[in-house]
Image 1: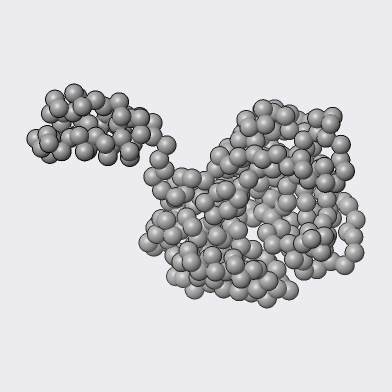
Image 2 (image 1 turned 30 degrees about the horizontal axis):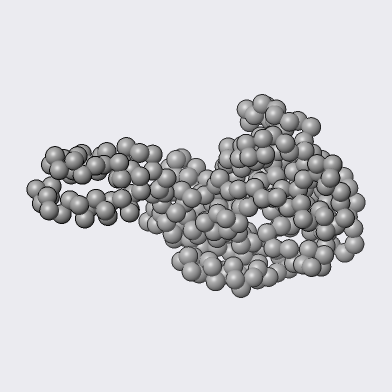
Length: 321
């Protein structure tokens, strides 16, 4: 109560410590005028405070970091201005670029009235990262979440999902993600119409969020000085959305910013489905691989093959070095 004037000075010290310069600008003279409490709070709230209202609001706006040391270690000349830069999606709430699509797909389904917190059950096949992002947002908004995933996925991912309150169902490694998809459909069939699959591999909200956020962030933070984009392919949303934004896409209303940018997609050498889809030749034995989050055993519908200029296969053994 503002009538307790003897408490005003301690309060001001507390406000200064808690709210920084905003409260510090409120002088003792102003406080002693018996300023109504609501007015005091309003005067502080008028500032554009950088405070997230919920954890998922922290998704996006990840920084770029100089990685030229990698080039130097591989005897690549950087004196001519060559620069390697990485985007630190690991600094997102759940440490993955999939944080973006986990939120965007759920946002999209909610806007369309397809799911309801407390009633709908989110069921999805995943190799881990998308599932973690979905479980994170589902926990925040009150959805039950069931994820199916190949048994080869790491114990750490499973523990993370369980910690987020998600139910995990493992499927045979030989069947990869298609096997997890079949199991997800089986689970949905038994949920009396309350099950809903976001379908990360074909959901348009996946590449859309990268056209709206990831691509613009890279363009802004690099000042447009990007010549080559290199991206591993899981759902295809990241490499497609970023490339569509920078190269331009009439279909999606993106004017060309740098159509000459080269897009390089990376996939496991043991599962060269994208290479095959573009008419290339597979190398060596094809089958299961150890690179989690890539090479899902299918060519995702969200992958825009028209923006891919080159596909680089990486063997699991080389990737694990």
